[in-house]
Length: 434
Image (cartoon, rainbow, N blue to C red; front, side, top):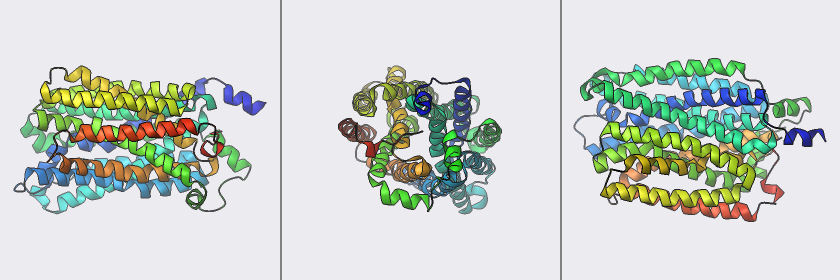
């Protein structure tokens, strides 16, 4: 009776404090990870030889951006392993330190004109460290809040974290907009591009301070008290006993990664190069889209709690497919409706707010961090890391490549929603978060 009452309770003040601090800390750390993409054009000119073709420079720059994604699985798996054995909070704090220091270092890194080939190699190494840090941060945040919040608010709790992460993107977009307004292109290339990265290091230290006020999850404390922690390597148990959950989580992650990378991170640069939209206009529209995305995440979280994951994903993916096709094809004809159409697409991208609900319920508590982290980071490494490279090549033959790729993923997401609806009452696919 006590467990049932706890599962049905409403969010307490302590729950709200935990969600708020975790979301804000995640937003500041995610800013550190994504600020790179907003200055991709500037970094490409500064960290690679000036005499190579423009498409090759862009390809190499996005390759370094992708390296951060490819490094996520290793960092995520290691931190998740200790998170399942030693506690969620410790890894939650470590990830911030691993993010703040490389971000500071990027802001102080000499360019190609100063140290030659060592410039892109140094940028690559620091980007890998950032990827390892974010690999533990995102899964850790979802597990942390899901195990704190009441069971009937799991979707909302996880969506608030996802919304907070998107606010980190918004912060990056706003700072990039300010940089383009306050400084000329010459000043940005000379020194001003370093400011956002130096700020990121400060944000990381602030986020680390915020994590001091968080408490270990009651679920982990109960596992520890009852001596029910994993008896073997947690990942080994996951790979042996939860393969269906891994596959489902990876597909959900693929949808999340492509939606964010394509619709939010790559589109501002795409609008500038493909349709000659001014940088300030593209970044302002991006900021509006991210605000809408943050709201869409919360709506998706509430929906998945009340309607279930199947219906939520079927409706959400259908809406995303329609709005994304309309947006990109409209921009090819007329950019006058850039702001409202981009915001509308951003809101439907909010379906990603329901993704962590699937993953935290897919694995039992003893191996939840490892199962979620492995599935999420491996899938994101390929989906998020290879998407910019794939689209850089695809755009050479198809100017609507971004639209077509998003539409393909929406079809797969709709199919996943149908599967979840049909399997709704299968206990093998749904473990209690508490």
